[in-house]
Length: 254
Image 1: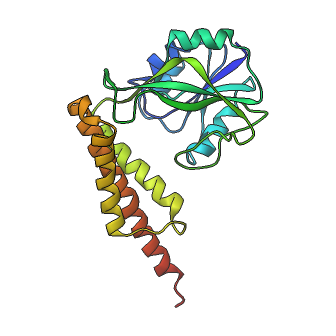
Image 2: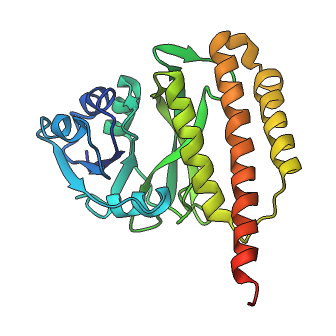
Image 3: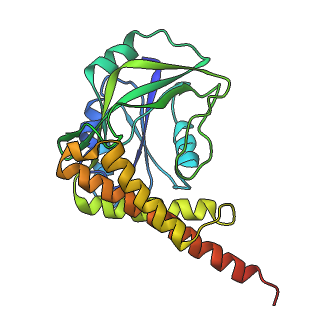
């Protein structure tokens, strides 16, 4: 395949082996590690098709563009270190005639541990993940990064990516703190916020996930995800409120 797989990684030694095994038929796999302290890099070195690069993390958009710069091919597919390419998608990638003017979307199946999440808005998400780097790139957003596709066609590829994003409730807590901090830093001085806005956003996120997106049908897993969405959105806006207050204080003339 004239496609490079690009994987961002940090402390994913419980998932990255499964990820890289699903990519063994790619001749070029870039693993861009930004500070792992577990066995992630040691595992990556065991795969002969992996080019292990250690680099900085400056938000997801910048870091993905940086990782792509190490790819041998212009066509790149972005796979996270907790994702697995299934056999049907691999076959599609081997046989598909690619169009430079098209950005390709992949279908995602989400898992908590080994339990498939069928509701909560997590299942069968269609996400842009493959493109020609001569034509486009990721935007520079710290979070909610996306492939720029204003002048491109979009096409969904056959097959799936299995996403094993969470393996414990503690990981929900850690990621809620991490993503809410990135959101607040990325929007300080740009968006307004208040304690009331933080509360209302949190409550709405729970209702939307648990009821509107039928998270209750996922059992206790749906409750965990819905509550996590509530907590993340509350902290996003309360952290932004705090940073905006600090910005106003420091910018006042003495």
